[in-house]
Length: 410
Figure 1 (cartoon, rainbow, N blue to C red):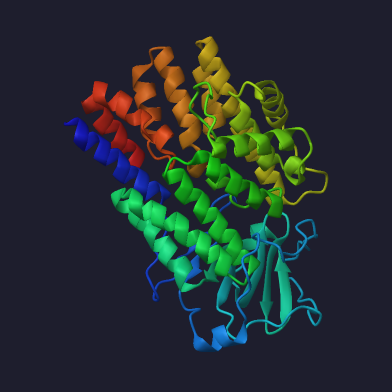
Figure 2 (cartoon, one colour; figure 1 turned 45 degrees about the vertical axis):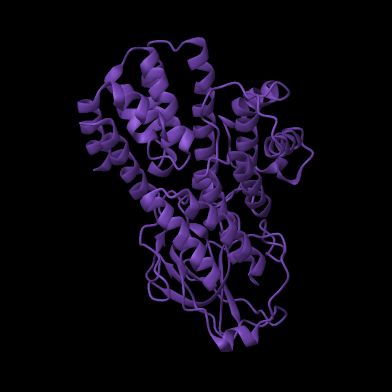
């Protein structure tokens, strides 16, 4: 099997892993994403039925603002009721003339209106006929969010990149998501545009810019619903980059770990900050200490199930980040079994980064089959620096690589 075919196979596998569950098609199809038992998958989905002259005339477009500027307090409690009671929203701003969002609950109920909040901290809040109904995040099965045409064009560009790996489409998605965020009148749409822009920037290899965008999401909610999109650093090289984007990301990370930023109370933001600084001469000591602390991350007393799950996943990812130091020092023979116990407890959407490190560790221990299998999983990463490890192992053993790719795709 040729090297070219192996690489294409891995990329096709990666595209199928990263793409939304249902392709987004202009004007006609609802893209639906489930909120699974591990609520880290994207709980939003877009649909293109918002465009209406009635809707646009009923709501004046606002100027660009930081996502979530008008969002409800993320620390506000969510009543864990199976049959949540609506609350009086007379003091709230009027709902738009056309409220096309849909929230589907695990008990089968379908709520149609304006989705206001969807986060682990605050749960899901939807305004239906002028009244707000609030449910815990873990009780939400699926959400559909009405978005602008520009947002839809951005999503289509990102989907096109995933299919054909055309970097121009990824660049177009980055620009369009920024415009969609600036134009959106709703905080939730701005929030989702930010999350999608993180994905597009990471696809272009602009991890530092993606990190700065992701820190915005953490400021909106310290237990960010988009943990699956976190642009963690997995390659183990010493950081010598002094580009403007890296300096900004490094400085933001230092402020977070020093307790001088609003994100200092977010375990998700601290995880990303430590990942950025792990190989930086100014911050590697603080990063190592932060990762050790996060590896035993515990939810606050009385935290809901969604926050507890976020803390569990943060602790697993922090442990996986610490494996990078083991690789540099030379892994011990029992390391792969220990790593596997962590790896198996992660949802699929968070496995590609740890798999990258495990591939390097297995290779160092001359466990060739294991290294190839993990490299194949790493190839599914949206981060090109992580995904390209597959080429290294596949070129050496093309037949085994073909079999491993087949197993992962299944």
